Length: 135
Image (cartoon, rainbow, N blue to C red; front, side):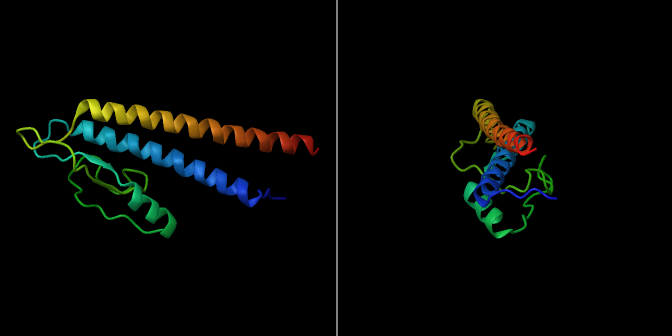
């Protein structure tokens, strides 16, 4: 017999799963930016939260804007929309990647991932407990 969760629990687990995916995607985007640190003219990317939310709610497909960029291929950011970061000053070679900013973004994303993972593990422990108690 399949297990069905109450709607609120299913929604919570779904939100935590999306949080895990978003945090992982932020890591991918920052890693791609760092990989392009020496690429003349490369514009640093960031996760476009509003567009990503619209896509997850509406189920839209992503378009690749420049497949030549490292990490720019389909699925590179786990179905998350990215955009060119607007507030970064370009170096003489036109590149806008800032190492300190990318490392901070990666650290923040790792913390988001860890918190969501802990919450999801706690939810599954409760489910496991409930299943064991019902026997």
